Amino acid sequence: MKSPRVKLVEHRPFRRAAAILLLGGVAIGLAVVGYQLGKRQTETRLFAANGMEARLADAQERIAELERRNADIKLSSTVDGDTQDQLRETIKQLRDEIADSREELLFYRQLMAPSEAERGLRVERLDLHGREGTRTVSYRLMLTQVADRQQLIAGHVTVDVTGTRGATEEVLSLTDLDPDETYPLAFKFRYFQDFTGNLNLPDGFEPSKVTVAAEVAGQNGKRVERTFDWKIEEG
Image (cartoon, one colour):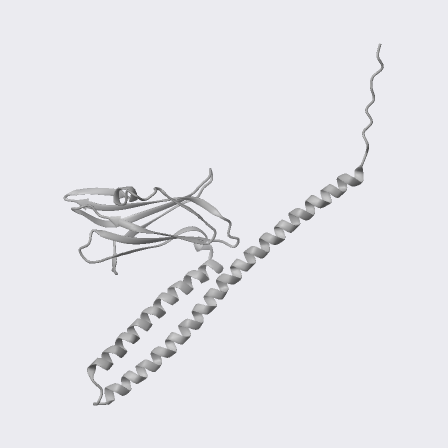
């Protein structure tokens, strides 16, 4: 009968402890790097918001100065009407610029300091642009994610246009209106993502509203939906 073999294994407790400490150090290092990257992105957003506030203040001062000039011109009989028209147009453009900047500033503030009601994935806005009577309309769709700690999210979004053709109601997807577009639209972002393209309306189809649905990938993916009235902005 053969005697059982005995295998000697060197006991190295210090090597195991060193390996555990090394792995722990790597994990801590990765966490610190992730925190610093997130902090840098947040500071960049805040810097952009502060820059917009400065531009708003400057535009408001320019409007005040132009309005003073316009009042002086009205008191003078030597200045022609073209100069007044130019001033009024400049003032209008500045006011439009202020309105756009305020909207953008509000958007950034919501991203950086969200309220409880605004958290999570959102269909932020849908803009439609075109000329009167045209059957081709350009669109810009924006999705946002508002959270204390923004994680990278991915998923897809659908766009459906509801309208009538004759007496029949129809719902046309983005594929029906733009066959070249990959559909559904895929998204992957941390803060926000824009989509742009064209909607080619078929003859006889009169749109009334647009429904946008975005869904995060995964078993527990969140789905949000928002409906917009069909409203074309000139341009």
